[in-house]
Image (cartoon, rainbow, N blue to C red; front, side):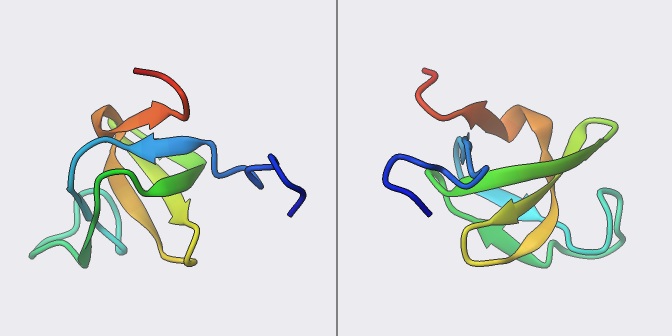
Length: 73
């Protein structure tokens, strides 16, 4: 990745949020938690959820309201 190139990881998680690996409406608890400030790449949208990938390769669904563009307040 070039210096200054986000590699598509141009969104930031705002607050600690649950990550659902098996779909936005999976039964049971979240697969894991994504920490506030984590950079993510949005892969698709499913209703009020975004299917994202983290820099460390984790993929799953998080609420759309928990994500903002990098640099946005």
